[in-house]
Image (cartoon, rainbow, N blue to C red; front, side, top):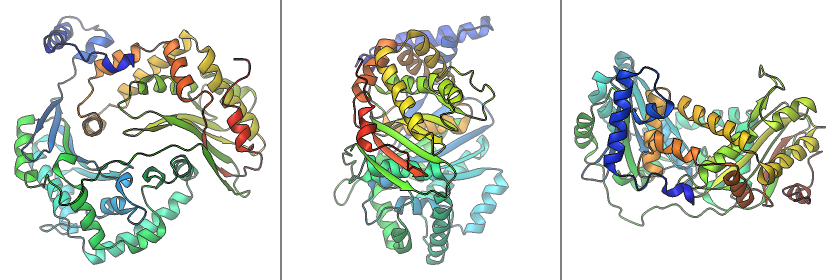
Length: 475
């Protein structure tokens, strides 16, 4: 719980002084420190308009920008009967509105030189565009029209229905996507998080215009929305545009207010044996924390220690990850990657392995042994390396106005605020080997895992044996 309060009590005066000092350092000393650059990033300005919609932006003074609408609506808010509706809505986003036909919409975007996109996750739906800063008024109006005034033409619905069904067939040929859907299905069985974002085939075949309108009417409410922007942005202008184009989005609910239902984790497994596949794909994970939990950062450091590796990496066996070194030395797998997937109130921490059918047992044993080692004998040296790598990945993931805009939108919905980079940096710095071992013992060591396996998996051990390797007798 130590990390929860880091920087929370810092006064605004102290933060402003730090920013001024960092700005002065930039002007007088070209060799500034990493910490000084973190204080020198633009301020995240946040304004709530009358209906409760939040407007958040960062001005980087460049000629382009990314602006989008982040909505608290995804497959987790669906039922078994309407699962897939949020994803269907995303597909319908650019098919025409009450004042634009599809070809007019596409032509307008192309003439502006802009890029329009959308995506759906388990907890959020996003519509965003990248454009010239001077075209911000047109893009905000266009986004508001897409969100509020979609026509849902019956012909377009049928066309997209077939497109989604074809896409489902393509996803079935992508083992990693299949594995992680199955991992959620077994780990969160009987809860909304068990459902896939795209939904089942039967639902896609039966979704109608009334279902789409009902979902929009239930979830597309102003307090559940964030209009986020990054790049060359005038925040005051963005607020005025939001009031003009999003001011009529309703804030209230006619019926029950939709909320996240608790999603319990179940230690379990799902096996899909297919001996015609060349390689076995296995994901194993335990329940971790939600996005805002104090233990999330230490778990991210622990995941970074486990690392990732594949045979195409130039370093070969000369990697810092111990499991990576073992994978090369003993030919354990073709690739592996650790993951820490966080939702609002829960998460999945684990690893995904691709290996030969006769190396499954060795690979799983080595991975779980590494988890137990980190939980009981983690060193300060490997924690320091993982912290540096995590900081680098954090900054690289925010390179450009689009990932910055995404980060703003996601954090406003998840945290209720944007976490400054210097605060994230401080939280990472506060982690040491004792902290990592503490969270590993609390969430990983001797806990029931969820396992999803696909391919030639005859050698995959019985679940009880997998469970027994989650601890070591010697410790």
